[in-house]
Image 1 (cartoon, rainbow, N blue to C red):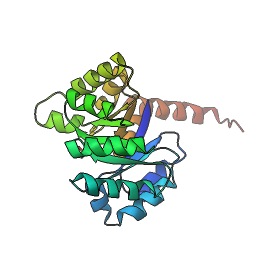
Image 2 (tube, rainbow, N blue to C red):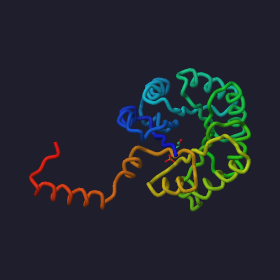
Image 3 (cartoon, rainbow, N blue to C red):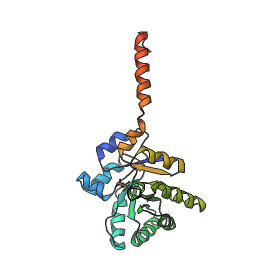
Length: 217
Ligand code: E4P
């Protein structure tokens, strides 16, 4: 299972580079807005920190502008994945950009039939949003499970990129279901490391070792 970092904070992303825990990065217009920086500069800097796909999202709603934005973004670096929304124009943009050899991530997916359309349009990634479905009393994980099953039934090459992940249990559930990728904020990656029994065990080992007066080296 690949881990993507869901952030547009270059310093935060840099701190995870080289750990083996970051296989790519996803951004969205809200994350770029939060960074307070120009999108093209942020994306270029992030692309230099990972060889994996870096999602950069178009902001237009109409097909022509989406295509122009998508081509501009993909020219920033070879590892840019152009992110388009799951609208009719977005699916048309997905097909056109994919036919040109560009990686496309179709985002804002909230149903399995939507995900089926994205695969047929040649998406490299589909991003079903778990947390936002959970927020309105629907089952985000069930959506991931349905999309994994449907793609597997028809051998679609589109990867299921579980998005809107809020906590470690989402990551566990996605891994059990077989989602190809989970994108998560750095705080969730850090939370995955922690376990109170690890801390307690380490304290005990350290205390017992100190009593021996030994040093390994
Ligand atoms: C990633 O590609 C998505 O934009 C992101 O995971 C959305 O997360 P949120 O629902 O927590 O904003």
